[in-house]
Length: 252
Image (cartoon, rainbow, N blue to C red; front, top):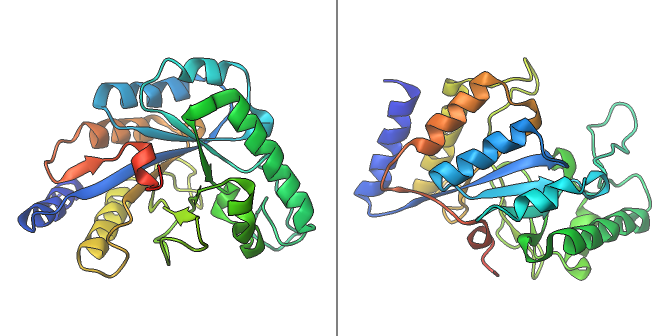
């Protein structure tokens, strides 16, 4: 059996239980309009797979808000402030860190929130996507007071609402091989991760209500990545439902 067959078999199991396998799509590091961005926007338009675009506020260029006005379902999330690493040597990269004074981290997030509101209006959902999917616990605890309703990192969530008024919905399937080629991770690895999360949801090993999140980074997509996404988003199965982004975060 191919990896695609394994995915269809898993979706068949969902269908046999009269259940719908929900999924969503998040793409990180957006700042400006590029050919790579146009490619993923074409997927959203052609296949009606809604896109959550994580935008770096400090680096935002004027053309991006103007371009997204033309799209139907794209929503933007806040990708930290400037995607700058503040960790010392020997520690994993992190912008929203526990090294600086938390007041400085909060100031950065406030600046970013203001930029996102001003430039994107109601296309901006108040959801924080921490750069490198890492964030200090004290920062998470402060998010609701800053106006954030949600947070999105990577791996199955431990709880749906880590703090009152803050919903967590993560991604689980990364299409890029960051530790190796830094290109497409390959069909077997990517579809294997997708099937594994869907199966874990179906059998109750992880939160079954958390939709399976696909994570992309358009700026580093190669031909293999693009071909895979084209195949994934064009695949039709009655048990698979790509969620509109406001529906991913249930307070909307």
